[in-house]
Length: 145
Image 1 (tube, rainbow, N blue to C red):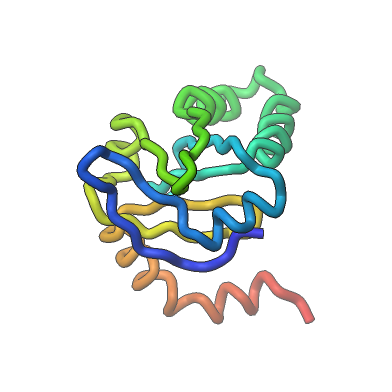
Image 2: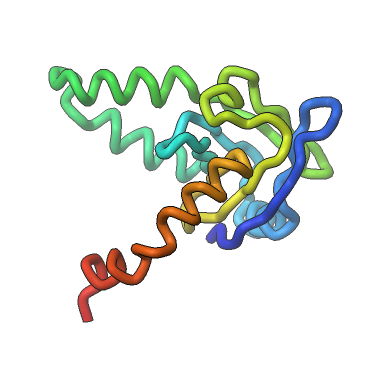
């Protein structure tokens, strides 16, 4: 559903704009509300409302008696916010989430099928540079023919 890599800048009012391709996908799929939370690898995860409900149900069904599940759920859900972008696709990311992802001004927004990831441009470049060399090896291990 969400695909591609887009560079954007947080404006003077602290707003980030959702890439036009993602706005088109959201409109075509009747997505008005999104949820943003702490992701993995120092990025933010952004889900459309229906996909958020699917993810939420998965985590809610895990046994809370396990310490690792409790830790993950606390960090994941305590960082979650809901947003509705304005008509131009702009929205504000709270400071605590920007701090988590080291986001200052320049960001890279990527589509990862069912979610959007928001990265500090610097951290995305570091991740991409360190991961692209092993991309084919990973593909060989994960994808069976």
